[in-house]
Image (cartoon, rainbow, N blue to C red; front, side, top):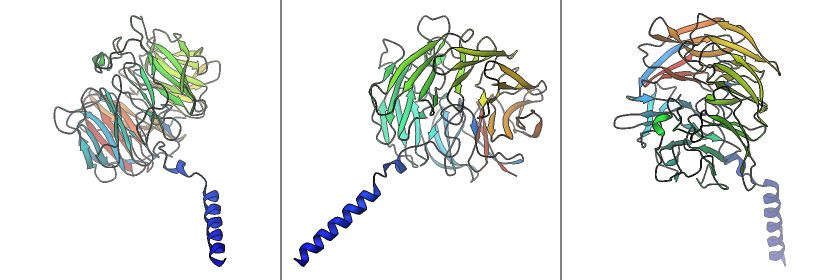
Length: 428
């Protein structure tokens, strides 16, 4: 009788503990890193972080990837920096320690041809990156967690709900992966018919200049608030690219549905779309030298603003609706306010040729790479409120063009150029 009492008591205790614990899987599900998870920052491509930026910096280190870069570096939740290079030999995917003079943590070689995509760090410093024909994930070491075939070259991936990874290839295949297992959730969506799964590199050479044989030349944008995915798509035999809106529904089948297409952007969109903080508006550069705002629910135009130059990189967008226009040769550093039914130019710096997307840290600090003299480049620190220069730091021996500025959770700033030079700055 006493033994039976003990067994019943222990059983009740265990049952009570298990009931109290519930399902705790969520804490191990993949989520975006606390740093700069991938190119253009968060899944919305906003190039904005809530981290308060440093107005004074010091150059800590410079390093070369000994090859070419087509995308900005990614920064993890700790000190890791991920870079996807195109190199003639040796390593191409590299992970460095940003706070330790860029000491190399590990590296490996990927199939070349995917240099326009950046790595993605989740909050556990697992890394996700594509190569022609495959999507891969690495743990904080160089050993592969999983590898899965895809049709085409994955653009920069994005995390959807916790544990879900969005992958869009340059040939228009859209997939949702379980980030931990590497299995595909739901049915992939093919934006382009008749894809040959054996020809993963078809049209890849057109992607850098966003030409017709590369259907998806830029990373998608995802709005966590609404579940909307927006992709720039150049359909076969079309005169210009369009925008496509897909609705993501977690746990449902189908998990992705095509909601709308829009040809409203003059001469078609250029570079990645960007979604507002509330997910209601899409901002994208047009090949007609305008910045466009469209409704994210239906793709209908809200307004456009002439820029008087061709913006070749996406704009940056803060939660308060202030937009800093994209950069490129001949660009003028320009801020625009979304006033609902119109865009209002707040200020323009005619004396600053902004060559990259502006990355912004909180409401008070922006960073961009600007032209310095005839051929040089400098990291410009500016105030987004009125555009005035706070600080300017020349990038020693910078060549090529800038591929972006990344901001760490520790307020470090990393800039990189297409010729493979990487510059690490720390708060002064």
